[in-house]
Image (cartoon, rainbow, N blue to C red; front, side):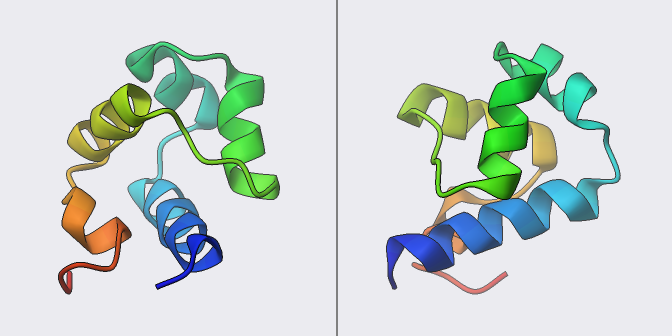
Length: 70
């Protein structure tokens, strides 16, 4: 799996959550602009932020990383 595929899966999980970007940002400790970059650009969160995102979105990191199916 390529980085672009991992980023696509992360974006899909964020969208599927139905949460607003500002609420996601507040919950994981980044700015809303940073979450926007995850959605619109080829930016991937730091590992600690990624772990918090996975917990918040209730999705396994293995799925986003392409190690396991959803």
